[in-house]
Structures are given as C-alpha cells and as structure tokens.
Amino acid sequence: MPFMSTRGAEKISAPEAIVRGIAPDGGLYAPLSLPNLSREDFIEFAKMDYPARAARTLALLLDGFTEAELLEMARAAYARFDDPQVAPVKELKAHRHVLELFHGPTMAFKDMALQMLPWLMTASARKQGEMREIAILTATSGDTGKAALEGFQDVPGTSVTVFYPLGGVSAVQEKQMVTSQGKNVHVTAVRGNFDDAQTGVKTLFADPEFIAKMNAQGKTLSSANSINLGRLAPQVAYYLSACADLLAKGAINWEDGLNVCVPTGNFGNILAAWYAKRMGAPIAKLICASNKNDVLADFIRTGIYDRRRDFHKTISPSMDILISSNLERFLLELCQGDCKQVAGWMKQLSAEGKYDIGAERLASLQKIFYGGFADDERTAQTIQKAWQDEKYLLDPHTAVAACVADDYRRDTGDEKPMLIVSTASPYKFASDVADALNVTVEGDAFAAASILENYTGVKAPDQVAKLKDLPVLHSRICDKEKMGEAVLAGFND
Image (cartoon, rainbow, N blue to C red; front, side, top):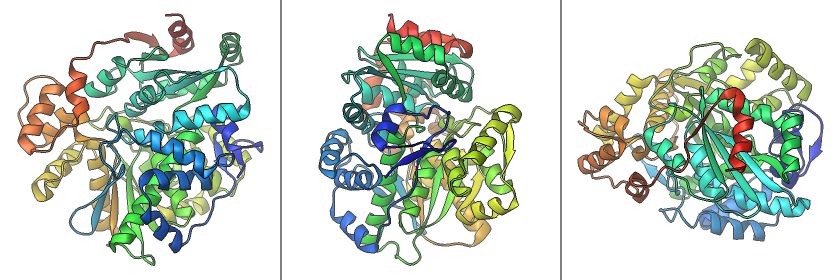
C-alpha cells in the first residue's frame, strides 16, 4: 500500500519511506489505508510463533516485501530475546494483563522494532538502488538510543549517531549508550532536554547545507526514531499478537474485546495500538498514560496541544517529552487525510507553541482515547502496591500505565479486561524501584539491581551484570545548536 506525508500529498512506497525516514516537507509517512483482519485471522495468528506473526503483520502493512523475506528477517531479529514468546502476556488479578516488551537485548520495548529495523532498512536500500551509506540520526529519551546502537552495530552500509539529553536519562540507560561498541556507532550528550535533541535532529533533516555535506561524504540521512515507518510498523505486530493470545486463552471475547493502557511520551507506542484497532483487533478503549509531563493527557482532555509548560525530570525519564512527534500521524487520521490542516497545526505549534483541534474533532478523539497521568509519588505507590498485592515487579513507566489504568476504571466504571503495556525491565531503573519498595540501597544503580534481586527474588537480566564493568567509549557533549558539527566530528574520529 502507498504512504503519504502527513504534511503533503506525495505518495511513495514503503521501502522508499523507510530509507528516507522523514518526508522532505518535514512530515511523517503514514498509510493511506489499512488492511482488515477477521476473527479467523486472529485464530491463525494464535497458531504462529512471534516471528511469523511479525512477518504476517509487516507483509500486510508494507508493500514491496514478501512475507517469506520478512519471516527470514524476523527470525534473525528476535533470536536474541530471553523469552521464547518474545512478547509474552502475563495475567494479573481483576482481569488485568501485562504485555511484557522488555525481553530483548537492551531490556526495553524499543528492541521490538529496532532489532527489525536494520533488516528492513538495508533491504529497502537495496530495493531502491541506494548505494550511499545510510546515516541514522536519532534522538533518545533513554531507550531508543541503545536499541538503535545495538541494532545497527557494524551493519554494513550503515552508521548510527545517537543524541541523548545530558542528565536526562537513567544511569543504566546512559551506561548502555556510552559503552556501545561498533565501528559505525556514535553517541553524543546534548545540553538540554529530549525535546531539544529531537528538534535538533529534525532540523538537520531539513537543512540543505548539512544534507549536502553528508552527501559529499557518500551518506544519506535516515532515522531510527519512531518517526520512521520502519520503526512504527513492527510495533503493530505485538498488539495483534497479544490479542491473539488472549482470545486463544479465553481471557477476552471477540465482541467486547479489551482496553489497552500504554505509557507514552512520543505517542508512537499507542499509535501502533490504534493502527492495530483500525485493522480489526478487538481493542475497545485506548488509554494514554503520561507522567508529570502531561501534555498528551491534557490534549485528550481539552483538544488543545500546548507545549508551553514546565519540563519535569521524573523517575520515568523515557516519557519526559513535551513534543509528541507521532501524534502528527493520528492527526492526519482525525482530519480524514487533510494534510494541509496537519501542516497548519504543526506550523502553529512551532511558531506559537500550541494548536487547537476544535470541539468536533475533540469529540471524535475522546471516543477512542482516554488520557491520564501519574506523578512520581503515585508511580512509586503503584510499584509498591503491585509488589505487595501480586508480587509483580513494575518499572516506573509501566507503573504509570498501571496507575492510569486504575484511574480509568474508577472514573468510568468500565470493567473490560485491561492490557497494561510494560515497556522496560524494572532493572533499568533499579534505584527508583528499590526506593518505591522502601529498600535501602547504598551504592550505584548496579548495587541497587543486586539488592533488588535479592529482596524480590526476581532475576535481573544478564545484561545488567555485564554492563557494570564495560569501559566508556563515548564522551562527546555538545550544545543543541552544534548537533550537526557533532555528527560530522563523529565520522572523523
């Protein structure tokens, strides 16, 4: 199926969209239509292993690829996960379920797409006849960075440069990035917050002078952020997979379905759930869970997106975001493909810091989405309650979702089965999880992980112990205005 920019009428194929990453007009590539799945399709999904489910999903979404070649990619991409189910669904009390997306090599949900993206990217480049090196530029609020570095490490014909906010990620997230090995990987800390880093990357994609310098070095730009279609499409697969598993177990029924609560700052993860719903997945309400940076929750409540607010550093740092890039794709859906309207809103957001979708579109939005937020205090209380009541260990991001899911049930009385999306291992944030459980920790994040493991009996992923003693290989820091220079300097190291 063809894809179009959210800000213009240009239509291109999936391989071209994946290589480009972002449209020349600054928009994101979105599908013109989506396939329709039946109940029988989900019965078939339930019979497959996860790589086969992913391949089937991508074959439906992305033109230019065969299901056979996608299956070969998926088997390689998901071979390093520590659970044979890849994205298992665990049952809690009161018809609540947790979709665990942290079993990949970097212990976060970004692995679900970023282990697949290098395969999609290199295959797309071949299909496009692209001979230049694909230079991946990515901003991260914590998890995307390491997942991109891990996925693209020493992949022929590619390089990857990651920018992260200095002091704005957890100690484990930072150590994961700055110890990354590979001849083609580069990591730079930016003085500023994630929005500064993300805006800087988008600016470079639209800078003719920078693009010319990259081209002179035989490089073409692309992205590993969820602005890239190749990042977003694999995420749809785990929602279809979860629904298939729950239907097969009789935990949900086809008619009523389930509600899905997603912790998100950039809107990509919940957008993938929306695409799954549009494709026929038995999903009822989509619950958007924010931390104290509650710009999305406010938008769903008021229809006004306003980034002019204080930025808060929280114990769920991967959601410390005020500019939610992927919302732009949903806006295109909300206004029936009117890309001029979307472009106008994005221009207004850039110039004035806000836009208003109006009462009619707000009503349509609220039929699909519920928005809520949890500050650090409520997040910690949720971690403590989940351990006390169910002996289930939540990371702070998943705890935000669990808290907002409970808020939704209390506010609406809707008792449908609930799927809570778990986006990271608690051991990526061991110090904060230990604090929430009132466990005394003396030492760094790695000491906290050991103490937390001893206290709970929940085994820490092997990656945590290995990470502690790895040498720091990346120490570059730049101002947000100097990101282009940092990219070029990395190639000359």
